[in-house]
Image 1 (cartoon, rainbow, N blue to C red):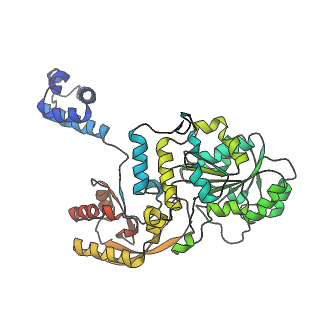
Image 2: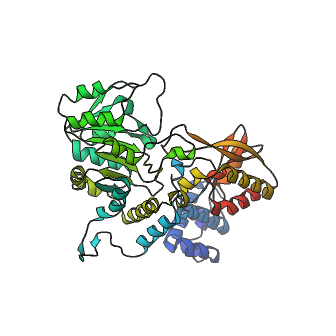
Length: 448
């Protein structure tokens, strides 16, 4: 006969002094649920057994269960990988001013949809619009929750049940399974692909435009590159032909650069301003890539098309919230004030000189008492500048079990994300914020 009848009651367990700190941390109801699940599991597992856990064991099992429930899964990490726009690590870190603006908009009521001048209901679409139009020269702008949403909204508003023309060289898939053809299909537009997978010519556009169409979409190859026997007409030439047909040209730029990346020793990434100058009527791009702000999908361009996009019912479903709009506005203000390279972390990382990186690695080695410095490369990442790298200096550690070591780093109070190169654990100072450096070194010391 088993001893399950000897199991303590939930009431007895919840009164135990050892569980009181957890109740303060997680709440009485959560701890009660934990006890009930643990007791039920014991009953299911030990129906034929005469051994039952002690009260201390039951409390410890419950603590483990409840602590897993309440432990946040989204936490800050130290990015030592050398990938500046690491999609899996949240892409662009935000400036201090951006964070302050987001907190301010969250802590109290805000003028999200209230016109302070008129004292009446306003529109959230005005926030960030003035900054976007002033910085890019566009006539109008709208912010939604990400760039996939921006493309979907534009296609739905301007090309539903109409032909939407796109080159086969641009039928891309980006991270998370976002496929341009599928988004076009969801919008209700009738996909018309032209050219081949490696070559498209102006005559392909000309032939497709002989029949009525809603728009032409050009998708920038921001996360891959086709090399070899390739051909693609310039955006300006496509724009001229599209405008002759009397329809808009949409440019899905993706990366959202407002500064010339060539100034930082990497390839030139087409800027938002260049897309408009080339003749794009609508340009869509991300807020959290090279722009360096919070996640957002930004739509800029001609007012006649933006008005139609803003008034479409889908715009409400995809709209940005007050926190995003406040953060994006603060980020854009850095560009307006000419301080983006100094204040926006992405550009600060891109512009960090090699001697400074070398100095930081040397100081790390001195403090740790171990490790070596080698030359290496940082990556841009985040669907921007595919294949582009920047020279850097790396801290390397020779570890017998490097994968186990990386796992230990990921389990630290402030998790550290590093990488393995040639069986060495390496850390890139370019992507480690100065204010995280002391904790980074303290955690390395504790493991070493």
